[in-house]
Image (cartoon, rainbow, N blue to C red; front, side, top):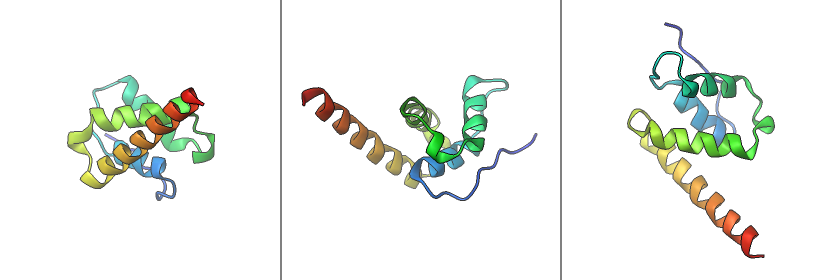
Length: 90
């Protein structure tokens, strides 16, 4: 079994992807393919749907991820929710 590895975290989403890369996934799952693809994608090429999916996967695999990364994801999730609400109001 080969381990997926990402480069050193620079961006918070890269840190989240790095944490997800160390999780155990079911064989041939969409989550596993997505994380592998995101490990190879430059951070500046991540779209909003990619970021939303990363936050969703952090929640799904939270029992395999360190508390620091979960808190980071929660902070970014709340920030994104507030920004989205502000955009819809104004």
